Image 1 (cartoon, rainbow, N blue to C red):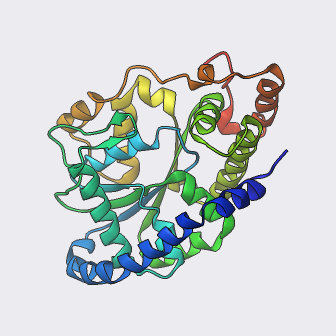
Image 2: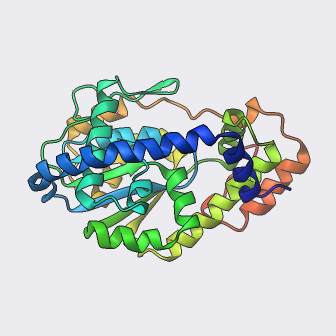
Length: 293
């Protein structure tokens, strides 16, 4: 079985252009964020909490991040990958400005991500009333970065010097793995399973380093079934109130049922049993199966 390290080396060897684009992105962002970070310095003084996602791609992060971004006192950027900038030495105000800008641009684009539209009518996506909570929806990359460099967690605490809150969204592993496999051009289903469980191991390790009150864990399927209740709980977790209009408008864009992408992929019994066996090591996957949820 091919491990994540080998798979990532293969991807990187085939995609030098992506590495060069990342370097150019960092160089381009530095002077602009330095200037605007200073301009917004007073605005950032109201920030009480930094919020980030940990976990897996294709697990519902985009939906929840967009709904939180619609809150008048919250900004959650759509996939900035803030830890990337933190790792290379960007300052607090620079990263905060980049999060603001990413949120604004996503809202101005209409809130589309892939085949879904996450625009919440009548609410505050891309802007804010009083900026009390700010964060980044980039769970997969953040998890991999924390795996590669665990000291980033301590650097995050020191740099932002506010309350940290981590959102761990879990989806049926067969659906998450299936969608990851469908979207990947490089991995087999077996390799995707290995990748997924490496992420599970990393999430477990990160959680061990956090205080209990710093982590909110929820299941994608439960959120879809009752978005108002879970969104209100999320807001309490982040330290902000949720108005009736906000909850109503957000709940109105949530699709009625989660997509069971496991049935879009040909699973053989051996791999179904493999995922079942490996899932037993992670309490947050308890109760999931190929047949149910």
